[in-house]
Amino acid sequence: MTAATPPLSETRVRPHVIVWTLGGESMQTSYGANCVAVIGQDAVLLVDPLIAPAHARPVAAALRRHTEAPVRLVALTHHHTDHTLGAAFFAAQGAQVVAHRACRERMAEEHPGLIAARREAPATRDLFADASSVLPTVTFDEALVLHVGEVEVEVWHPGWGHTRGDAFFFLPADRVAICGDLVWSGYHCNYEDADLSGVREGLRALRALDADTFIPGHGPAGGPEILDEQAGYHEVMAGLVRDAAAKGLDDAAIAGEVRARFPNHLLGLVIPTAVVRLKL
Ligand SMILES: [Zn+2]
Image 1 (tube, rainbow, N blue to C red):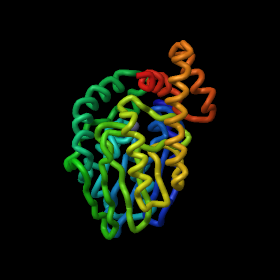
Image 2: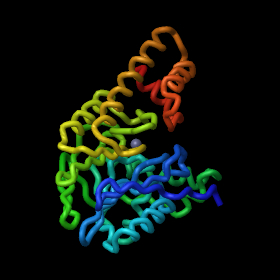
Image 3: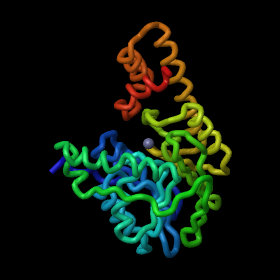
C-alpha cells in the first residue's frame, strides 16, 4: 500500500456546483487539483476528475451523497494528468469525455508513456495500478455549450494559455467560472507547457465573464480578486527572474529567491521549470 489517500474536502459554491480536492501538493493528492461537479436534474457534469481512478472513486462516492443522477459528461480543462486520468473511471460507466482538440492530441501523445512509467516506479505503482488512457469522445476548437439537465455550461477555448488545449467553463445563470490552470490560488504556477502572453490573455478572458465566483485549477475558489492575484504573480515572477538573471544568479539561486518571495505557496516542485521558461 502507498500512503493512504487523505479525505476529500468539499466546497459547495452553489446548491448544484460542488468542488472537491485532496489538497496538498504531491502526486498522492492529485497535486491539490480541484474536481468540480455541475449537478443537473437528470445528469451530472464532472470537470477534471483528478489524477487516477483511485482518486475518482471517492469523488463518485461524495457525489452520491448529493444526487443519484449519473455522470453523463466528463470535461477536461487541459491534458495534464492531475486533471484527466480519473476520467477512465467515469468513461467505463458510460460518460462522454469532452475536451479541446489539442488537449486530446496531447493526451494521446503523453498519457500511455506517463502511466507506464508511474506503474514502474515503486512510489506511484499502487496509485496508477488500474489507470488507463481514455481519450475524449467529443472535441471542439473554439467553443461549445453543454446542457446538464437544466443547467447551461459554456465551454470556451481562450487560445494557448496554460497549455495549447485549454478550456474554461462558465455557468451564466450561476455566475460561476471553472478556470482550470489559468488560475492557481496559493499554489505556484506550472509553466511547463504555457504560453506566457497567452496566460495573461486567458486571465483577461475570464475577467470579461459576468462571473462572481472563480474556481481555480488548484486552491480555493474566490471572487475576481484571485484573477488579479494570479496576474500579479506572473508580473512578479517575470520581473524577479529577469532581474536575478541580469545579476548573474544561477538557476538554483533564482529558484531560492522565488521561494523566499512566495514562502507560503504550495507546489514548489514547479519552480525550477518556471525559472527556465521565464528566462527565455
Ligand atoms: Zn496543468
